[in-house]
Length: 92
Image (cartoon, rainbow, N blue to C red; front, side):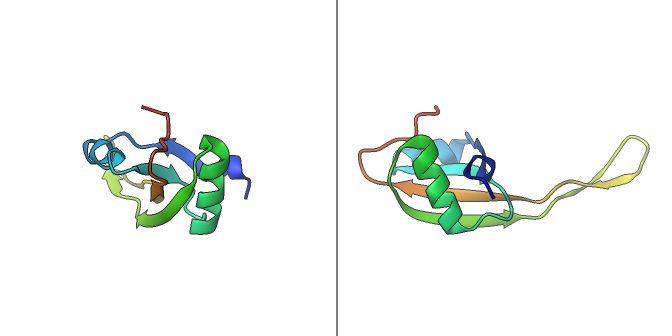
């Protein structure tokens, strides 16, 4: 997997902005990426030193469309990345 394909987007949420004060950031990543790949991709893309990576897997929800068909949304993965003190991911 290429390092450009691992990080999909930075999630800006209320909880995420509170954690940014503690040098932690929410990232939506590829579901097949592991912690080592996520750490390398963040360090390369944002130029920071990563201390810890935690991941959370989310199953895709089942939604009902207008025609009353059930559709399955894609599963996704979130990574909570802790960077070294004094460093920031400049995306806000």
